[in-house]
Image 1: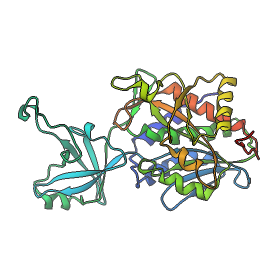
Image 2 (image 1 turned 120 degrees about the vertical axis):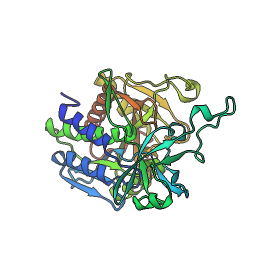
Image 3 (image 1 turned 180 degrees about the vertical axis):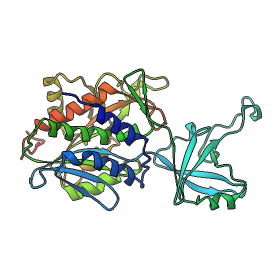
Image 4 (image 1 turned 60 degrees about the vertical axis):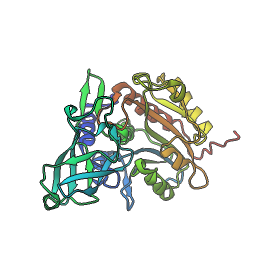
Length: 359
């Protein structure tokens, strides 16, 4: 069984390269729905852009597999008289990586290119250098004044993304911005593809859900779970590879790329559903890692788990290096194994299961 075929990898590259920042996910969602269309019976969408491909829509018992589609970005916040642009975050954008990065400013007139400027090393005082902060990073689009900036269609509220594109490093490492978590949308789409290609008939409705606005507080998942009212939710997101420098394993745990999917332990994780995932991984000889979270997972799992009076929810994560940078990195085999684990787990769910806490 080919987990990621050539067509799928081509879709992944196109999907990652497309800009779909929080609040402006529709171009990416259209690409995703176009790819998914042959593998589902119908689609559900909502007013903020979450997209759901549905298999067996008439079934009463509903299982969700979910990822989120948005990426970090910036907003134009202030334009100076001499044509420089100051920004605020849209999601968890990292101010420290900004200096010297190219950007795309999205306007009604099209893309306006620019750069995050930074003072030359020659002009900075040794030992007293300013570090990049939210209040001192700025964008230069080559305009001489505010009027010229505005004539190009740039105004307060325009969204700003990085243009960095998909690369394959050392044959099996995928590198790009927005792998967090467009990889999730890609992986759940592959689950649907494999079900279709292998003629698997499920005894329940499967809702392949690509949520918006996770990066600003799980908002898309909060909305769509009220619409879908699922019985079970299997969420996939990314987690940190903690083997790179300057990460404290005593705080973050030990997870790394190339070692398999990461199964989470947290209050929002339903114990019986998690154990079903683990037993499936062992049965199918899929490598996996474990991760403990404290009060919350920080993923859409929390939104699904605590909705509709409680939904049995679990999280399968893809280990990732350099989260919220433009060089996010994953291992192809981990991606394949997350897909396999979700594909096999949903086949181990029976329609009508309660996953009772007291079983």
